[in-house]
Image (cartoon, rainbow, N blue to C red; front, side, top):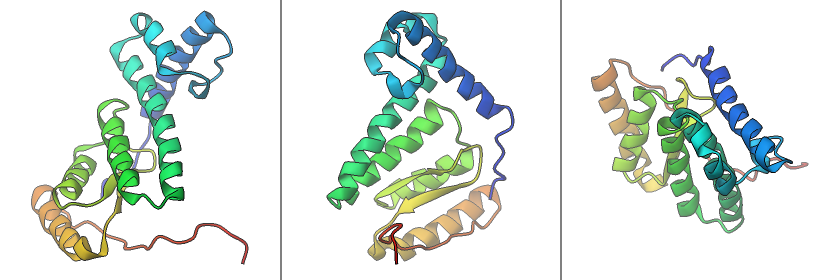
Length: 172
């Protein structure tokens, strides 16, 4: 229930990552995007970056690894690993890439307290919503707690949309 607004904040994060890419490309060559980089390369240029720029680039490299791990986990129906990676993504977005807000962090913290398998900000951050991987057995308890505690803390009753995992895109 926080209006999603990127403003200039998105450009600042992109610039942080572009600085890291520029420095890595100057030093190692063949680094056009952070997709082409690794943690060792980033650590080798760390002293030339601000702490904030370093953390933002680190988040992107970590997220690249998480996406691959989640892809493998989904192939194996390992939703526990998917959930752990969702939490890692959220806290990276909150603490390193700094695109979360108190309301989103509250929702993810509440999800963790309730034993939700995974939770993270959905979309570009700076407001918006979370997506949660919730077992059927705790869904009602979780949604009740979120509605009650969020309203108590922020004075707003959040909207909750229940969805089910499907087979994904395919030709019918």
